[in-house]
Length: 405
Image 1 (cartoon, rainbow, N blue to C red):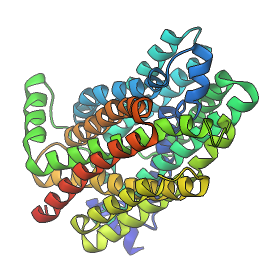
Image 2: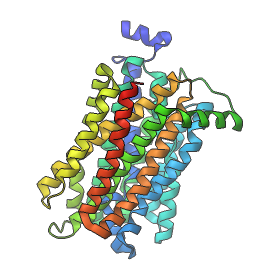
Image 3: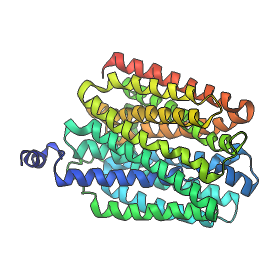
Image 4: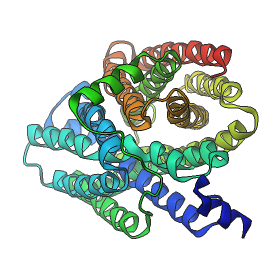
């Protein structure tokens, strides 16, 4: 009863209340849909390469263009959400991206598929731009880090489901049915979110106009602590996606010779990312984000090193550690952005959109460079690229630890 009363006095929803459960269930499901669609082609990149007669680097464009479209669109949807509200954008984004994702199964040629993947990324931008800002506004402050961790856990679960679903369906019915299956899953998730997600109660519009938006952008782009968090998102996402973009090519060749379905089973490590994001979020609520962030970086670096030997057990264990470490980092950093922005008097939607713009920019650029590294130097080249990016992440994490912002 006390929790419910506190939630109703304007402090935000607390665990134990029905609305808190609705919020967390909705955003978990929304995260599943978003990342299932975003990375739906990653498990079938070798299949697409063979089907359309394109190189491994060109095949990675089906991931990179989607993340690039999402990242650029975030620069619009973030400020827009500070004006028009969060809930409407979340629902519109999920519905549109689910329909576009399903349409990708009907693409008649390579250029059409790439175009649809780019447009899908633009449509997806409405959810990531506002999710952490919505959580900060609607939930009690004592739950912010763990709630962000649960949302990031949903994105990790969605990434696993999308890859497993497309990989298994592609083996049986081809890549078109694989993309259609992911699209149908996203449609179901969109309906669930529309039914469950509570309308914003604590949202306050920041106003409108180009000048206001420009001032907000400049402030969000010049705050030193936020810049460090943006760099963490950019480097860490690039490190992860570079590894996973190339993984299918490594497992489809000697000495493994795995098909799409068997190779996609390695994505079963993704629940470790969900657990890690939630666990590190809870720890951060207790001892502080600055103390936890470097631990996630160390875990990810250990995972990359373990993937070196050409044995399936080593690859699976290494990917598990990398996934757990990355989602610990991303969960902490993405939840820290709106908290820091709010403390500095910067619109949270704008700051969150800039973080995610950098996150997806890193994913797009370094994800494609992972294909170049694979072509030039094989797996050692991919490892070196990923380790260099996590070195940047580590330096930024240490700088944030010193700031204790």
